[in-house]
Each structure stands twice: as C-alpha cells, then as structure tokens.
Length: 156
Length: 112
Image (cartoon, rainbow over all chains, first blue to last red; front, side, top):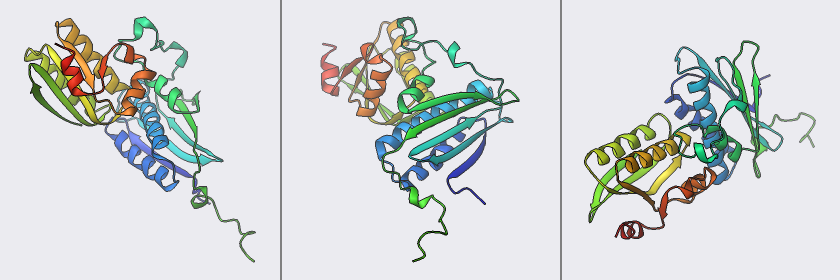
C-alpha cells in the first residue's frame, strides 16, 4: 500500500535542483496548513541539508544522487536527506560562532539547521553515504488530509 | 535574485530583491559587490528590504563583500533588513560585525 504520508525525491547533485525540492516542500507544507514563519525555517534548513549533501557529500558530481524523503510523523515534519558520499563527521566542523571563525565565508550550514529545526540526526549508510534527518514540530498540521482512512471509522 | 545599483549622494546603494541562496543569488551578489568595488566605490550601503530569504551561502557572500570592502579601504553597511534577515544575522552573531541601520537615510548619514 502506498504511504500517503511520505514523499520521495531523487535529484542529481546540482545546486539548481534544490529549487525543485524547495517547491515540493513548500507545497506540502501549505497543504498541511503550516504557518509561514515555520515554513520559512524548514525551507532554509532543508536547503542547507541539500547543499551539504550536494557539495560535501557528493562533491557536486551530477552522476551521484541525493535522496530526499518528506514525511509527517505524529506532530512532526520529518525530512531525510541521503547522499552518496564517503561519510561526514559533524564533530569536525569548526564552530562558526568562535571569534576566529566569525568572518569565514563557509561553515554555517549546520548552525542554520540546528537553529531552525528541533532535532538533527546524522547517520551513515552501509555504503558510506550520509543520512541527515531533520525534525520540526509543526503547529496545527492538517494531518487529516494525509492520513489513511481507517475502515473501522465513519461507518455509522 | 535581482539587484540594482544607484547613487545617493556619494554613497553607492545596492538594492537586493529576492532570494540570496546557493547557486544563483549568492553569485549575483558576489558579482554585484565586486563590480561596485572595482569601480572605486568607498561608501556602500546594501539595501535589503526586498530580500525574501538568505541562506548560509548568501551570508558567506555578505561576509566576503564586507571583508573585501574593508581590505580595499571602503566601508560597507546594511540597511532596511527584513526581520528574517535580521534574525539570521543575530543567529550568526554577524549583527555585531556589520553596521546595520533601520533606514537607508540613516545609513547614508552615518558616513558623514
């Protein structure tokens, strides 16, 4: 049975493809009735995860894909981003708020994700790629439009 | 992202509109600021009222523009920040680095 709570997209490792996923995510959040400020935060975090997967994970190799899953779990919007890279250790990223790093051009993507989502989890695939899972509680999602109809209900 | 360059007295104003995000907007911002500085501008205000989204790459370009301007003896200031952009500058602590003004007029006046 298809899972109506889940969207899956696979994109080539080009930055312009972030726009495609952005449009799908925005449309999905609008369907869910998520407020605009939350939408903006989630869109930003998702873009950072995708940019990292394309740039650092897949080294901008267009032959390598980034897989994106969008789903609702309870009151959380969940975004999972998988790359085909060699793995990633978030502990090795320099603190972008340290005074000596404040004027660095790069290195703020994880900060953005942490600030705009409730939870970020990094995992590894058996083949070495990185899986980033972003979670954000969404106020008042219209989950009824996503949930499967329970045949035991509504038969009065 | 769309941008426009104009003069307000001896201050060069760069109007930004749209998204400053990886792959397109950040590059446009880089080209715009380089052109302004290559033309010899020493007083620059980036008017950001029309910016709808800025990501970490866009912030990186702003930082790069700031350091390039400073290294060339120019001053770069920000004006009319939308709340979301202001929030990002606070989160990244760059609000303490950039000269930020509520209005273009205040930013221009600050050079006097």
